[in-house]
Length: 97
Image 1 (cartoon, rainbow, N blue to C red):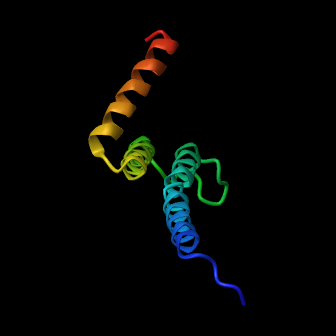
Image 2 (tube, rainbow, N blue to C red):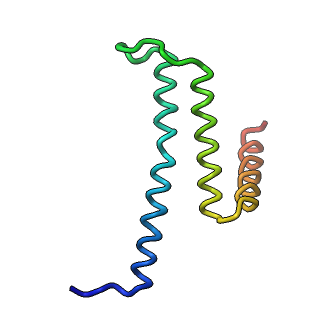
């Protein structure tokens, strides 16, 4: 069996580790959907089982998770913060807010 060069192996492990971390960060999105469904009673078996605060908590978790992911991508919390602030300003301007 032919071995891969060390650099290729290290890079592949790096990619896999970051892909796993990004996948783990998508979990809160499903929790938002669950909270929305529970808040509106859209699951006939459970009925209304979540509150508006539950939904807001889950949405906040998504924002926090995304911010942590941005810090992981940049490796620098200040750079991630600047990028988020720039993006927020652009979206706010586009929305006319």
